[in-house]
Amino acid sequence: MFRDYRVAYARKNVAIKEAKPLTFLRQSVSYMLSHSARNIPHAAGITHFDVTPLVEYGKESTSKKAEDLDDKALYRRSLHRNFSAFFLKAIAHGLRHTPSLNGFLEYSLYRNGGTLYQAEDINLSFTVHTNWGVVRPIVRNAHLKTIEDVSNEMRTLARKARRTDPDELYFKAARTYAGYALRELDLRAVPGLWMWMRSLFFPRSKAAPDLAEVAEDEKLQVEDILGATCTLANIGMMVTGHQTVTVIIPPEVLMFGIGDLHLAPMVVNGEVVPRWVVTFCMTMDHRAFDAGEAFPLYRYLKSYINEPSLLYDWKPGDEI
View (tube, rainbow, N blue to C red):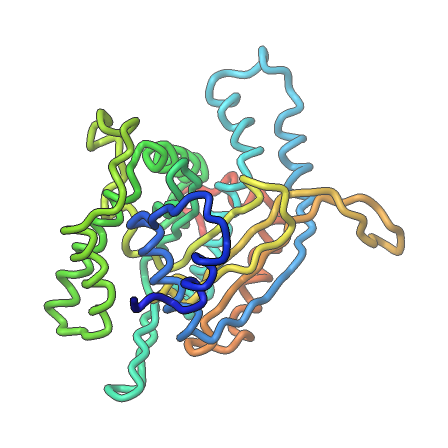
């Protein structure tokens, strides 16, 4: 009783191989993204960036033989091929110049009409695929760090993500949110509270046995995944896909999706030539701002791609 009637029909008339209960991570993602898709008017801007200058800069920086370089030079050579760190830092620098895109929205039709909070911190979460699902650790204020520090932090967070049980982590995050919901008497949190309490008393999945012996300091903590002001999903790191249209994670107002770096024919000076291309999809919450406010961010990203040294050679104290 009380099942979806379409599922009831399918259960009776379709041979079922396995009934696999959703983990708490999948329940959380399903609830959050369903809420996002129902309530946020998404506007997507898709741009193809010619990143040939970035690729050529990396080749020029790696022209010397390995035996002629010290450890620091070898590390910087490998860094010039770390495009994930470059794009994350480029977005952070771009958001520093377009503050209305960096923050979170409190939409309240009846109480005060809504408030867009422009954040001073630029907390960029990035997606990490693990054996148990996708986790979004946060690099905080990448615009104030060297690209070496950003790269090291991303590597450390990704390693921790793959050594963390997502169900355990998201259950702790849900408990943190539950405390805030109770203090604010926010009835919109009732479905999430019910999901958390149900999983507390009637868990549907077991902890990953491979992670039982991992020390706490080798795992992601709640503060590593909560408090993002923008998210970057880099599908190009995982699959050969030119484009992804992302779903905003509330209360954020902006999310990036990056495809893979690939060769494509482009017209340069009237001739068709092969160029290295990356597709950016910027998904915006149209309640928070008009799409025109995002145009300057594209220009900043293009300037960093055309002159990669602006980020690779940047150090604290330099102009952002």
